[in-house]
Length: 169
Length: 429
Image 1 (cartoon, one colour):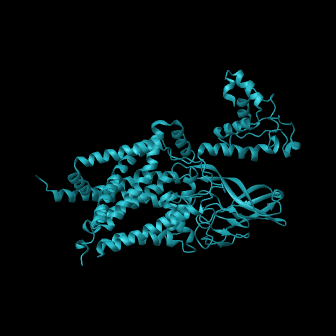
Image 2: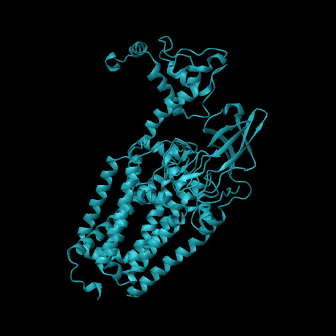
Image 3: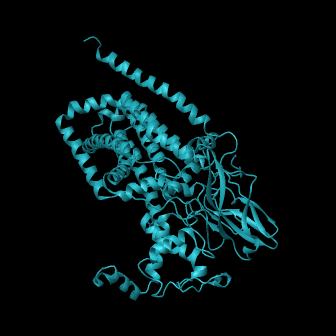
């Protein structure tokens, strides 16, 4: 035999290692560097979204509101559905993000306040965590009333952190 | 004292050695079938946010070999995780992990690899659990110290779930991870395979065949689930992980404020312990005690998770979801004018220019009604009826029309029409 077993095994492993190294570099480069698109990615943070007539938000507890927003997402524009909770405070309307600050599930209305169905985080009526693993209060969102229309500045924040860090782009 | 000479280690260790061999064999056969069924699925699947769910639903509705492959891929995915886990655990309690250290460590790496396959494959159908489960997992990835945010962005291809996300998960699932798998086999398991074929001989081939047949039988009898299409604004959906991750999910409920314990410390500690153990002199009894504690921990937490979810309603499959959604759509979109009972008596009826027809009269229903209704719901009708064609899929509109027929069509009209169409009245009850 020209090549003995041990040498064959060694060269076999060398081939495997070479394949690993050769493929890992270009793939890894794109995986890392292609992650953040140039320009604006999904969700433009400066945009005020129209939520309809401000008068539709009546007195009483928080109510869930679904809305659609158009986002520029890489090569296309898409429409995505989002949810927020709204409540009226005198002349203004308050908005709180429905996205749980723990791992990003959508919170539901509890008997009082909010409850996340995933890891059982509870929040009080002001969105402050009472029990469960949520690291920070539910994120407040800016609203304003233009004429009779209600406008919302919709921003998403990174889950899991004690501080509200808005998602870039 | 060297553990190899432990006299009191007889039967259970022999049994665990056999378990290790059997689970390794299962993992091997499952991997082959997963690659095969995966190639088949890749021919049908479109990794785009707009198309992914539709392409999987098409497979489901077509039935036949596509649905069979999907069922196989779905069940064997759990199977291979369990088999690899048992292989590692059995190797840990027996002396295997010291006798063939690198093989044992590659086994641990394979387990991580299988979990990575599950993580990347889970999102692909883009139904409700796919979207929400992956969102939650990415949320957990975010909490890895220092690199978590960047890691999550790389997986998503941006800071939120978007057009770049599915192609990335797909590329990892069908190209990058399989390459790692091949390299693993080249590096380590080639020897194991040779050893197995030398000692097992023909019995091994028979065993492989039997395992494969069992996999086909399971796939043919238990279809893969598919829940409704992912809805990113659905505050009613309650996401839950696969059954074998329930313990980790439950653990997450107790980690308050130190999420890196779950996302970084626990995995690093677990994998680190497994990697170091071959270098340590431990008795099999100690290792068995550790493994028993681990199983107790996992099953205890898993059982607790199930117990806390005992009141959680069963999740509807796509078809059931369609029926439920039609009823909800009718309430939300239609009832304000057409009325909850279909009598055109909704609260907004005064604002309309023309009053809608009463859906409960016999006159309303004839053989063309369903077709017309679908057209009107899709395209709208002047002056008041809005078009739902852009917002709801054809299937959802059909479901609403069917909901209206099932709930508001008077039985007499039904009878007349069906007789008209030549169906026998026997079928009407």
